[in-house]
Amino acid sequence: MNVALGVGGGIAAYKAAELARALMEHGFSVQAILTDAAQEFITPLTFAALTGRKVISNLFSAANPEGTLASAVEHISVAEQHDILVIAPATADLMAKLAHGLAGDFLTTTYLAFTGPVVLAPAMNSNMWNHPATRENLRILRERGHVIVEPEDGLLACGDVGPGRLAEPQKIADVVAGLAASGRRATVRQHRDLEGEVILITAGPTQEPLDAVRYLSNRSSGKMGYALAAGALERGARVILVAGPVHLDPPKGAEVIPVHTAVEMRAAVMEHLEESTIIIKAAAVADYHRVNAPNHKVKKTAARMSLELDPTPDILAELGRVKGDRLLVGFAAETENLVEEARRKLESKNCDMVVANLVSAEGEGFESDENEVVLVLRTGEAIPVKRAPKTAIAHRIFDEMIKLRLALHSSR
Ligand code: CTP
Image 1 (tube, rainbow, N blue to C red):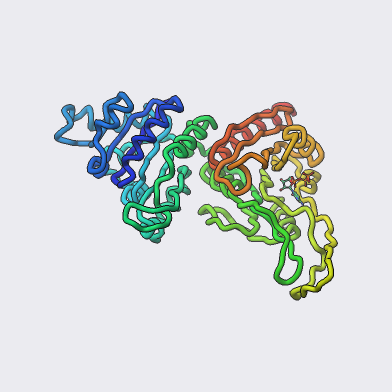
Image 2: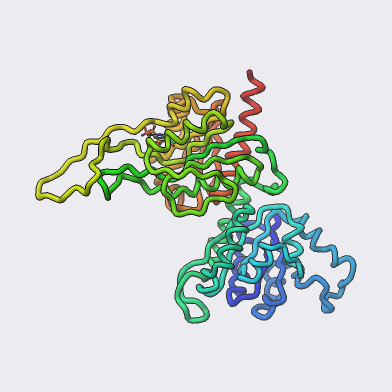
């Protein structure tokens, strides 16, 4: 598989050389593209030596011996010949150009001509990273479906300590490998295959009050549900996102209904059931709650205390009973017997698909940006999906969902 590696002009440009090597160790063939600014920090020769390929540096450069027509359209062929575009370091300037479609050099024109998945690894000073202009550009790029490998906290070249340090090259290479493994080659911009669908997605945890100030909850971050919402929007669906309390910006265009408790989530889901064509229950709903929780703060006493809890409404099971023709997708977080447990849930709750993941795996599941799942289908199939960013997993879920719907319809 071919990766185009765009290198921006920042102190972290030298790490892009390590990234080129790490990508090649994953079996990718790497074409480096350096901006003018990048060449102030690292020479094309370094990349040429590492990748064994001529480095592309500028669009209409006088230094480019073939510098006329052939190279003037080369960005189109580079865009066509590569499966994934990775930009590292993505500087604040580059991110602004990408967000707004400015195309003044080889890398930015290649970006515009490129229709496959894009991975951006930003690096910059913390204040630049936190600036509202950068945040806004980041939001635009994320919504476009690009995978962002967030910078790390640490000592920066400028002497400041904070977020902005380029993620470790090995980590960026792993993300690219995950994306490749997820099989998502075609671009989101080419897929409008969910147009006309109304997708109801639940995401995040629920919070069940114990008294006026305390609650029962879980570690769900909502990232998987939000990635599904963003993916569905990119593919043309209308999205109703019933969201428990999370710290995420909802994707633009989603109709967000914020809820706290399982009872509120059930009410919001049932209210929008009629208009939905697909329902995805990615939320980690609390299984128990305290009915009639006191609305004052319970005082501490010396005595031991115990809590009496009642089961919450099982929204997924209820949906399974009333779903009709709608596709119903549940989630199963398990610590053992993954596929068997998922099959049991699929049957007992009348789902069409259960997305099962092992919550014990390190760096995956609840709070992570990545996940590794098995898609258990009503047809009896169990499809393992290798570790990949949640955005890629979300698209894979939609790919399989579309196939499943066709299979279910044709078997009727
Ligand atoms: N779910 C739900 N309502 C609940 C509890 C869970 O809709 N009150 C949904 C979740 O959104 C998820 C699926 O059920 O899609 C799986 O949740 P999980 O808690 O793993 O399943 P349980 O049925 O509680 O099974 P078990 O406790 O045996 O794992």
